[in-house]
Amino acid sequence: MNFIDPSAIVDETAKVGYFSVIEKDVKIGKNVIVGNRVTIHEGTAIGDNTTIADGAVVGKPPKPAKTSTVKLSDSIPALEIGEEVTIGANCVIYRGAKIGSSTLIADLASVRENVEIGNFVIVGRGVTVENFVKIGDRTKIQSNSYITAYTTLEEQVFIAPCVTTTNDNFMGRTEERFDKIKGAHVKKGARVGGASIILPGIVVEEETFVAAGALVTKNTEEKTLIKGVPAKFVKMVDERELL
Image 1 (cartoon, rainbow, N blue to C red):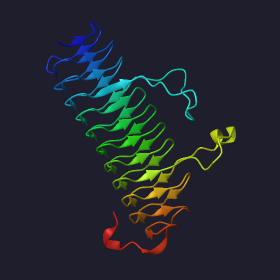
Image 2: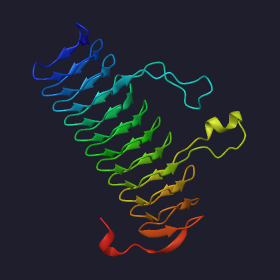
Image 3: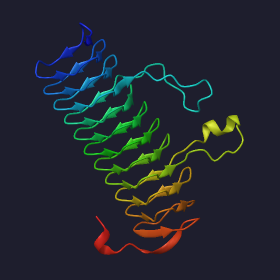
């Protein structure tokens, strides 16, 4: 048995599994497939031909802790999901996010509020995307990576598994840190190898290749290969490897 609020607009071609909840003012487009035990929160808009797998929670209202470094605005818009999107099993996507068309959010991923994700993006299994993140078209984020708040990933960026981005340089819990939180900016075509760590505010320039396990402590130069702890210049990226 499902609960569908009378104000929800569900296209007649959509299919909804068992024990799902569709709240007030939700809009579900043509040929959408909603799995079992899915919760779609108030106002969420879902584009045509989108699939939402079992156990997903979409449009969840955020409720951060009082001690959270990210504060909410008074009004957060409803979640928008584009056409032909795939949302995996047990994903959680918060209200205030915007997901572009033909994007995959894989099983167990989490996407917080005030996030913009472009078209043809892959967010892998178990990835966490925090607040105020922007992800460009055709970017790929592999399994279990952590994309911290205030990070920007431009178009066609590749993030390998278990990459960590950071945004806070302050060891002490001072009030000063709230004004200086800044995530990484990874520019078009850059590739970040598995288990690498990018420190707060770092700019990874276009077509940079960060080798696996690197600790990126300084801004990079375009089309360079860097590796090590801390990461250092090794050579220019082979022309055959460029976009």
